[in-house]
Length: 293
Image 1 (cartoon, rainbow, N blue to C red):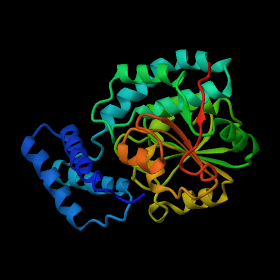
Image 2 (image 1 turned 135 degrees about the vertical axis):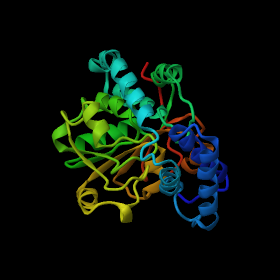
Image 3 (image 1 turned 180 degrees about the horizontal axis):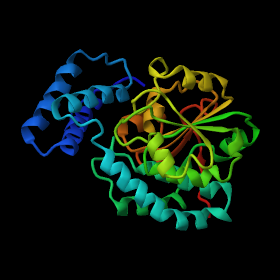
Image 4 (image 1 turned 90 degrees about the vertical axis):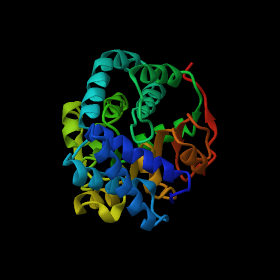
């Protein structure tokens, strides 16, 4: 997905959010934002928006010396999700695949790339809504693809959210799944450290992309990841960043996300706040998939 004009103020805001997490010094915060805006002037607007996260991270490190301004937020929401997990697991354990899928997508609300503040109550409300609202997409087709695939590559998104992923992983054969996190700090996206902390490494093979980008841009990724990507016969891509960066015409990919940005919603052919399952076989106007009753 190419950059849109509406992405520009979002990038400026995102640079300020990251700067504020890194330092309370307002002069340094302004320097970060000004450096990002300076680089944005010459940035290739045909590139996907998540690539600008590299620019923001570099500016924050140069101005403040902080490598991972989102580290405390990631820890906070990993802990919150782990606190919720026993209750969520109880909801999903004896329920249908559909319930686990809904809760998995609901976890994508934990996104500080699109929301400066999410909050515990917003997460709880999203969980309740997820169990009754329609899904924009083909839940049955996704489940069938999971059953038929021999080699699934699951590309994760945010810290905290990855705990919700465990609910759906419990419904699948984890022996045929490779779970992928980011190759370094990238907003509040999950890394290997988060995956281990959240209990993923004990249930599924985990690798990283080799790139500190909140999405997947193959030329930036490691050879190990690219080989796993090519080998997979099904790819599960969680979150907006993966949707923005991966080829939506690749029929192996199922995108699972909450539409939290109007630009992404327009590109996906859905409404803001929709729970989305997208695959190229559906096109970008997938039919509604009803509540779990």
